[in-house]
Image 1 (spheres, rainbow, N blue to C red):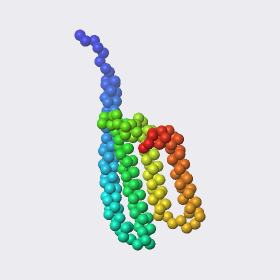
Image 2: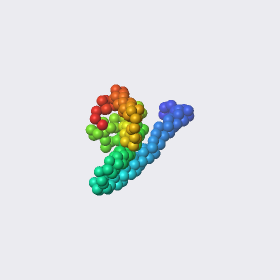
Image 3: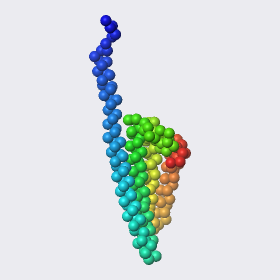
Image 4: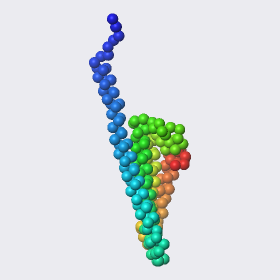
Length: 189
């Protein structure tokens, strides 16, 4: 007769609950798939905008000198909008890949890749947060630049406000670099 002790009912219930709790991490897969789908969608929309923007170049070349400055401002603003959209797609991509690596499994195809070592070295939620924060900061800077192009600078105060905004962006870049997670810690982006 086998005299091995049988696990108690309480320990079996606890083990079943812990197994269910561990399996619930697969819910993160919904966020991963949704994030990647949004990234692809936004990237495609930005690409359509870029193609449309390139199609307006003949108008720029054929414009009179007086209209060319207005067209340049408009085209530059549209190019910045496309850049802003691409940055949003990158944010969503990093978020999706980071969630997958944190909650589901390592991405085998990325193992040994130099790009993965710079982009996907996400070992904790804190790493993911810092990666996203750097890209969000870049997106905010692009949005600031886009808004700065549209403003009219009529007084010295307007120029001082622009300079203050630029100084604050520089300070934000400096502080993120010193946090140990910015460009100086990660190498080139």
